[in-house]
Structures are given as C-alpha cells and as structure tokens.
Length: 159
Image (cartoon, rainbow, N blue to C red; front, side):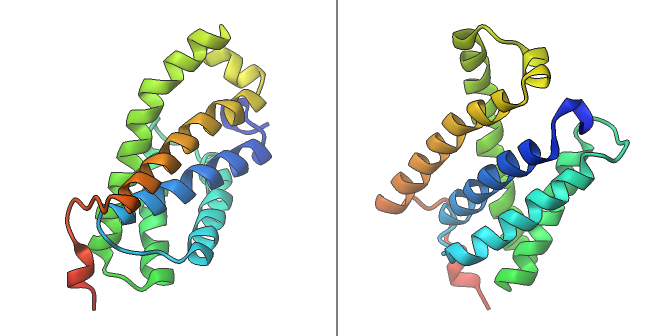
C-alpha cells in the first residue's frame, strides 16, 4: 500500500486523468494550444513520478508543490515554452482542480455516505470521485475552447 493507503495503480490512474485536464484547461485559458500526444506524455510522466513523490516523508501539501514544479519543468522540456508561461498555466489548472475538489468532494461524500477514511479503506472510491471532477474540467475546457475564453493571451509572447 502507498501512503494514505492508496495502491500505486489508483495513484497512477487518478493522477494521469487529473493532469490531462490541468494541462489542457490551464493552457487553453492562456491561448496556448497543446498537442494531445504531448499532454499524454506529460500526464503519464507526472503520474509515474507522483507514485514516488507521494512516498517521500514530507509535510502535508509539499508533495503537491513538488508535483507542480515537476509538471512545469515537463512543459518547459516537452513543449519548449517559456518557464513562466508553463508555471502560470499549470498553477491555474491546479487552482481550478483544487476549487472543484473542495466543492464537489463534500457533495460526493454526502451522496455516497462516505468520509475520508472510506477513501483510504476503499481505494477505488478515489477513481469514482475523480471521474466527476475530470468530467467537469473537461466541460470547462470545451466551453473555454468553444467560446474562446482567454484570461491572457500568452501565445503572443511565445518565442
């Protein structure tokens, strides 16, 4: 079992799905198009690294900061974009995921009569709870793309 009792395959699956939409939505809001192949590569690498980073004996929340910087570094290396553009886009994607998690998870726990301990004892609940989150992020991405919602156009500043 992994830290917090989550098996590696649950961590891999949930991290992979969440990272896809962190990247797609975060970069869409800054008008930076990301190729799906690159998104899948970055998401897979981040998900694999998540398994190992979560094992580190760090203060709560520090794992997330490390993973943000890992993803920013991957966007720099794989997408060849400016570091600040990657940082801004990834932070916005993570922020949106965080807001959705803090909003939807209590609702999902209430509907399913579960608590945080249930998520540890029944690891597949993490996948079940991640599906609505990534679904909402996917809808937000599609809406942002369709209606050309852009916070700031970083594509104008690309090298």
